[in-house]
Length: 380
Image (cartoon, rainbow, N blue to C red; front, side, top):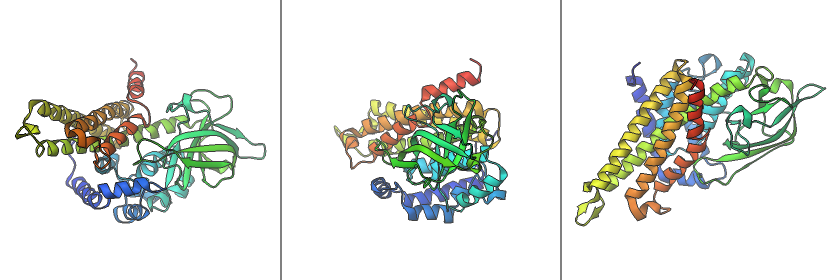
């Protein structure tokens, strides 16, 4: 395997960095944080129309570009570096992967073309109030109706961009079923009677999470994605791919924290010399560099595994998520420490990365949960 990007992939990454430098600056991020939707509709339209990111991993036969996860990892590292506020992760890395893994060909045609064109955003609703991301955490019920279709009941929590998504992919289970058995995926319109949603107040305002209440939500049989009761296997695969994507974001954020810390250490003076000349600061920056480079290696390996549908994905995805989560959080904390008092202020961006690092550490499951997945999947 070759961890070097091709010239075309490097140019794509450079283009992403130029665009994000202009459209995801600190000022743009702070404005999006305060908005009800959590993102700028104009920026999202440009992402869809000019850059084509929503279409990146969607196959050409469904209206997409048909590129691989290697290209997506390169883009997401840049979006994590600038804390992009957009429904990109929720739509492309969560919902689209679930549709690709579970839906029938006709259902893929129904939804993926609109997603690729940027006309439809989507969200994946898996976790519930307990915050678990495995099959045992799914308690929402899908009750078959005598007249046909299903009735959904339950509560979904921590749904990324769920309050604005034009399509909700909801995981629910057959009443009385347990574990992996009985889980199904449903494509549900957010205006369906009995469904209500609202944004949560969270620590990280750069990524909006929401709660979705399901109260006797009646949906037709055509809303079922794939086979009834057989949804956990494709959903688990989609969550592995999402873990790879999130790890790439975390690498970008960790790199930005390192860059901020080194730049400040080379300009801030104490006792007549820049603080970067002190051994304690040098050691902190060196430790951050080791974290960033190790996390990048784990992320790139996971991206390669995802792109090649390799059996290694089962281990590479949770490994990358666990390591990159902790590396990002350590780098974000050290960045604040190196900045000293100014790093704790609202005006400085250091706290934005710290909050994103902490929230993404828990998103899709904690590092300990993903280490447990590695152990289970390798037979330890």
